[in-house]
Length: 49
Image (cartoon, rainbow, N blue to C red; front, side, top):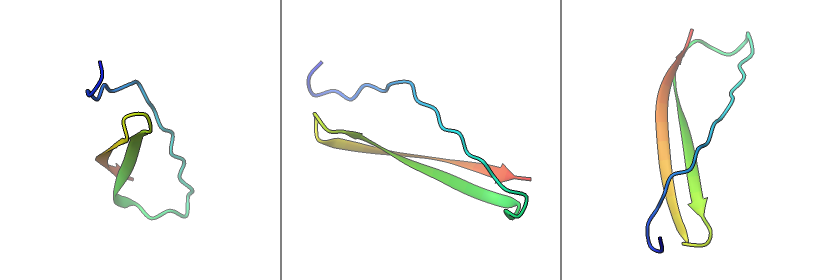
């Protein structure tokens, strides 16, 4: 399918230390398709309690 972006499964693990401040954070990821020469940015908020 030339010319179309197709998502692929992905996951991420994030570790926090006891000294990290609780609060709202945002994770930002950039996926790069080197063949098509395109980038897509995704973000998601989360709360550390």
